[in-house]
Image (cartoon, rainbow, N blue to C red; front, side, top):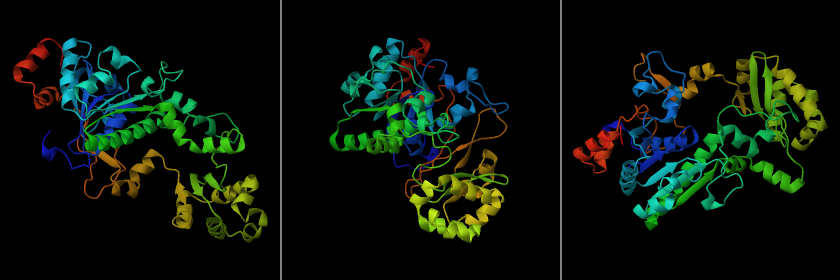
Length: 413
């Protein structure tokens, strides 16, 4: 990887071995790669199975030829690909050599898989005491506290359900729970793990000692649902589904427009006065039942009905003209509106990357982190299967003869 291949990032020089799959683990290493880390994705023979997941741009190279779909392309940008068979002793020996030159290893296998391969934390730490070993599992690793569910497989909806976020999310107040659209059960734990890795690397830099970093998907979701914890602790009442409102603030949530929906956030009485002034309803402004947030929460139904009746008479654009910049307000955007809105272009949140074989680039979501001196961001497309096997092994001290022998024995691709 040449110096011209990237924009400097704050993690430039950090070497990460990425043994992850699906969404949660790759999102963690993507965050590190976006900030300049050299992330080496270790794939099994044939490549990561998520390469086959679409949608696919017309003409794009499919997994059978080493390519990938848009799902893989989105969360594996900025990475290198090495194909290594860890089921072979020689493959495990290669990984041990890579570990000696790495700063971080990330994996999201089920608990015990790496140990059974002879590649558990203790083994790798003996090879490289500075190594930060990061694990992401549904219910955590037994090293940090053995959950009764430690052996259960977990995906996004499981984490959402057991972590508490589904229990307060629903289309109507008191109605059935609803899964949140994006894979927050994967992405939120990924963010926490990237944060933990950065913290552990800072410690390793000062002390010369790495450590084991463990995030459970359900724990991360519970951490996001911190309000549920303190509410129940304080009141002994179980918070339920909240519809499109907020249990402690009013009006605060989703309201109809003539051509869709808008979101309003009125967290205090000053914003309430600005809202009713725009509504042009003196009676509503003067009614003592709505004078304070506590009073409005107590009369939630009447407040939401009055505000909703007014917003429904106007288009999203009209409401933006009246409320934008005055109170916390935003129209509900679909993907086409996001693509056409100037904000996301100015902020470089829609990034085009090459898609091998396709006649046009793939647009993916950019990094939301803005840093003045080390900008990071999306530097290049996701790798083809095994695209960097030879060059990466050479960088870690393998000579041409060793690499050729490993390929002959089908240890690498």
